[in-house]
Amino acid sequence: MDDNPSIYSYSFDEFARSILNKCKSSEDVDIGVIKSAIEHLLDKSINDVISDTNAKNESVDRGNNLYDIASAHYKEAISNKNDISKIKLFSSEMNNTCNLLEILCSKIGANFGKYFDYIADGLHKYRSINNLVKNSDLIIKIIALPCEIDYALECYEYDRAFDLISFSNNLNHFFENVPFMSKAKQKIENNKQNLHDSLCEELALESDITRLTKYISLLRKLEITSEMDVRRMFINKRSSSINDKILRIEIDPNNLHLVFSTCVDIILKDTYEFVIFYKTLFGCLDDSISKATIDIIIDILNIIKNSYNFKRRDDSNNEDKNNVDYSSNISKLLEICETYSQIGLDFTCLVYSILQ
View (cartoon, rainbow, N blue to C red):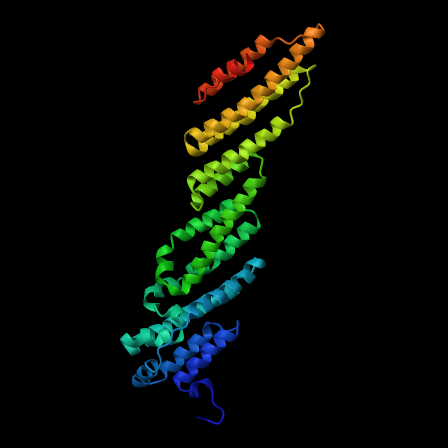
């Protein structure tokens, strides 16, 4: 060994070990290190290469390290949208390295797998990824996916995050066969869970029916929460929202028309909207939505009944010149019943039984 040895004067065994130690201790190691190792091997005879690669039977997941480096470069690039040079540089280095690997493959033949296992598990399936890796645009997209999904979630762009996750599903064959991308796949799975958690948080806070419906729709498409649980979340959220309105109704015996119109608004607008959106989302009215709707309507009808009873007691002691026309109000409720019966809910009997 020379007095001032370069990396090329080490035995391959020592050289590879020094590379692995650097990979473990530094975030700055890039694909150039692997490239240098390949160049070093190309300078050796076939017998030397075979001898060195069989010397040890170790495997290190270098692919994840490479992914971390590429991902960090990309995050830096998208943070200042005008520069993706680092990712392009990474892709270019990847292409150059793969070209060298191709030469090495032809040199050592079947021993290639054993050689590269020794340096990095992450690239030892070069033959299966060669063409894909050489496409710089595609590799940039794959490296970029988790970063872009993160960015979409930070900006509350849930539709875009879902679209990116859906796009990743088209790459499953690639993720499954290429260890280099195993970490990308794991990060995307984490993104998917993060999107699910964000949607659940939004669902708990949202009151706008349109946005609420969008969140529910995305939750169903993610297929993390069961269909039944998604339906239950929607029912609980909307029932709670409507019940809040019911609790705020003030019974003013001197203004029963206002009490009645407020109740009708809730039945026709909020509750009816609730039922219609449920039917639009899930395609049918099942027992759970029927029960939730009926429970809401019973609460509202009881408010109307209590108001009228209070007014009747008051009227018996004091003649009311502005007496409420109860029959016309009941007729209005029956018209609402007809509206509901057209979508599969009939609570006509409820009106008669509660208001009698």
